[in-house]
Image 1 (cartoon, helix red, strand yellow):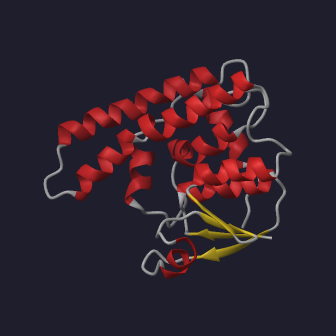
Image 2: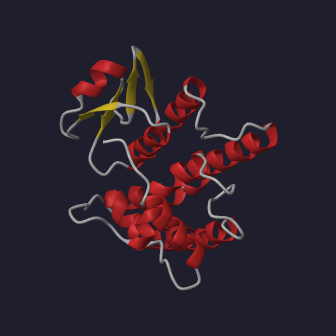
Length: 206
């Protein structure tokens, strides 16, 4: 059984929870409080979730966990088997985490500072809103972001893009408010809206 260290409403934890359910794996969850990260520090040597303990193998970071699951339980797959498809997925994951995330992270940084730069916030918000068109285009002629079937790309992006449809009751985290407020899902994004609905209906490890 895999032990999953998680926290409420965590986007990166949801990536892993979706992937664990996709693989059909049995999971024991350890819910941590953001005010007391000692359980996850004790097992992994660092304070961030998600972390998994897979029979004594401890893996931190959502993307590293996805790759660990694919390496140790290859079926059903999260990554394409052919080199070109796997490389395309790697490019997408790098772009999403290292480029797309810069905008919401930058807005959060400004809002947590003593004197937020409103012009920078507006520019970054426009970048987030404009990215919705790119996701809409990726879904042209297919149900999922990079293929006709689910891949790690869908599980990596969904926990962030789902906020275009709003937040769950009780979720008032600043980062999630940013994702909600700066991703205006409109009538010109029907494929993206349908994708959010499809992925949201999938099971998650609890």
